Length: 341
Image 1 (cartoon, rainbow, N blue to C red):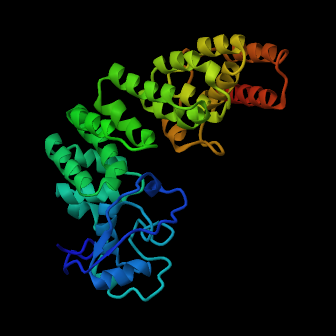
Image 2: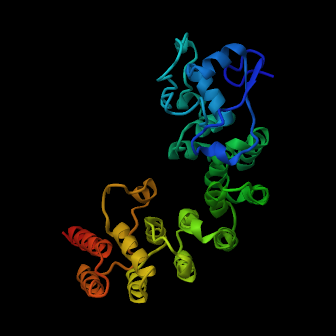
Image 3: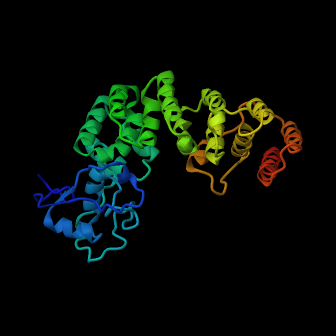
């Protein structure tokens, strides 16, 4: 077997990632594959001095794990940024160029795995290949080292779609603890809508209330008002009204009619409505706004008049004047009238 880094010499050393990983993806895997490398690459690996191509090769198999973290490497160039020893002959082991590998399916999948956030241009290129060939390659990689599933499932959802349905169902049936967020997007994109929604919502409902707010973003990928009905159904279980609920509502065809209804119902739905209104009326970049919302730029689907919203929110403040609601109302009104200008 060839070294997973240089792909030139035979494997001489097997080394497991450091167990002290500080909450990384590896925490969900009590058993995972070791790095299988030659002696020279082992020395470079543990000294954070892999050459660009070696980094690329091993990350494509093991993901962004310990020894391979972006604290130690520039993922645009593969350059070691904090090497403990000299990086030799880096120019002879250069990072793959997209234009050169874009017509090689397996290398292109490697490229998609190595990117921290797989870019749209990579996904578009992968869609030029036969879906079943893409799926076969993804399955083979996960069979070899299941820890790479967090990247494989994303590609399956965005590229293969419904052709990956049975595989995603099988993987979900064999899921490990705390893998809901790994499966959320592929389930939404590979499985028929109603069935997919049932799978994710049931998983959330069966979980502990303490983790409901933490996990609710798994429903983001549906972008459906069915999610708003679901939020109403579980509202009695919402103990911590974090911004995750507002983000979910804003991403789910949120309307002023729905917001008005939730304001009338009161907490916790009124607080969710206020957060959702902030997200739906914000334009451009906003401090602490998630990448998801920046890309989606949600809007109220029924496009209410700013005056209507402002009056209703001022009325709402007569019954709920805590600092959080006052700040939210001020934010929304400012957003609405800035848009109008």
